[in-house]
Length: 137
Image 1 (tube, rainbow, N blue to C red):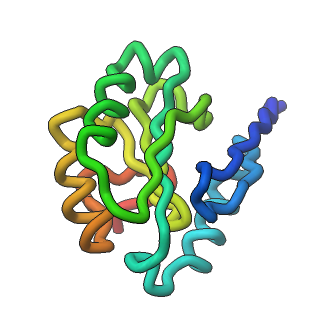
Image 2 (image 1 turned 30 degrees about the vertical axis):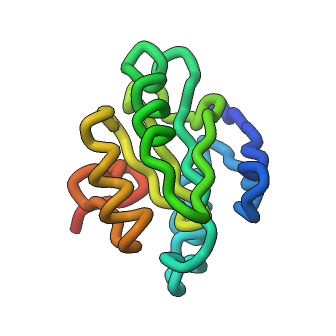
Image 3 (image 1 turned 90 degrees about the vertical axis):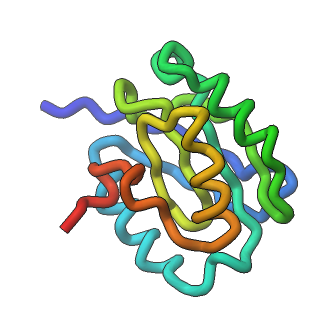
């Protein structure tokens, strides 16, 4: 039997990022559905970057990733520490809302690429995408 865990992500203050309720058993479906809905011109919308700061991600260097994002401020982008994003062992995990783009194994030296390519230009960084939610065809 698969054990379900649920967790709640509140909006990044003061950003209009939506609150989302995720269940690890049904995340793939929910994430893909949400991604389809946000395929409009999200590059012009306010964004929220969540960097997991829970135990495993922290051991993998998440505090330095969060500091790297904080050192590169972007207009209309809120960067915030997050509790567990439910993908332990694949971190540090970074979630960009409302785009629903997940990055895994993010290193501090990769943050400028995410800022330049995703947050400023609106194109996800393909080689950094989390394979569970963004399968490479």
